[in-house]
Image (cartoon, rainbow, N blue to C red):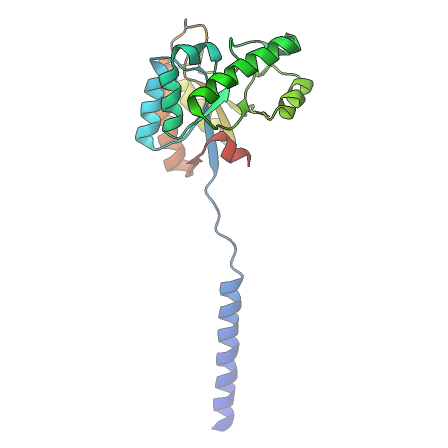
Length: 224
C-alpha cells in the first residue's frame, strides 16, 4: 500500500511539474497584422474632410502628407487632422518633382512646409514623402541629416485614375503586414476628383478588419 501511495505521489509531482513547464513556455500570442493608410496632396475643403469623417466614424488613425500651398489655404483642416489623432507629414510646398530640382529649392520647399505644419500642429514627427516618390538616395540622406524620415509605400492604389471597385480590389489583392497604402485626400492641382477614394475607403477598412484582422496605425508607429 505504501509503495502504491508513493508511486501515486511521484506521478502527481511529475504531472504538476509538466503543467507548470507548459504554462511557462507557451508561445507568445500572435499579434494582429498592422497596416498604415496614407493620404497625399491635401488638404482641401471637400475630400479631406470626407475622409476625416470616415476615419473618425471607423476609429482609424492615418497619416496625411500635405503640400504647403494647401496648408496655407486650409489651416483649420490641418488642425483637425492632428486634433483627431492623425499624423501630418511634409509633401513639399508646391508638389515639387525634387529628384531633378536644385538643393536650394528642395530645402526651401521642405523647410517652408515644415514651418507651416509646426506652426499649426506644434510638435509633430518629421515625416517626408517625395511627390511621385521621385527622390535620390543622396536626397534621402540629406533629409535624414535634417531629422526627416522619408516614407515611401508598398501598396499603390492608383486612386487618382481608378474606380472605387478597382481601388478596393487592388488593396484586397496586395495587402500585407506592415503595409503602407498610398491614397490621395485631394488633388494638388485642384483639377481632379477624389470621390472614388472616398467611396472606397470605408470598404477597405471594413474588409481589412473583418477578413484579415488588421490594426490601422499611423505610419511612424509602423516604422518603429
